Length: 137
Image 1 (cartoon, rainbow, N blue to C red):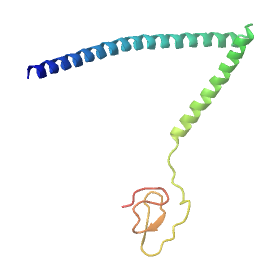
Image 2: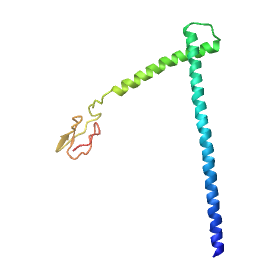
Image 3: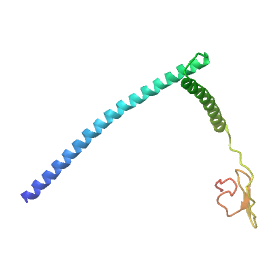
C-alpha cells in the first residue's frame, strides 16, 4: 500500500513539475511575443515614414534613385486604388436590399398565398418564399 502512495506522490510531483515548466515556458513565449509585436509596430511605422518621405520627394519632383522613383510611383498608384476600394466599400455598404421578381416562375395550382416581402405567389403550403427566401407565415 505504501508503494502505491509513493508512486502516486512521484506521479503527482512529476505532473506539478511539468505544469510549472509549461507555465514558465508560456510566460517566456508571451514576453518574446510582446517584444516582437512592439518591434513589428515600430518597423511598420518606420516603413510608413520612409514611404511618406519617398512620396514627398516624388511630389516635389526632386531627384531620386530609379528604385525609389519606382516605389514612389507604385505608392501613388496604390493610394488611388485604396481610395477607389474604400469608395466601393462605402457604396456597397449603403446599398439597400431590393427584392426582385422570382428568377423562375412557380406554377401554382390550388390555394396560394403571396410573400409579404416580395409579393411572389406560391402554394399555400409553402413555408419559405421561392423568390426571396423569406419565411412565410
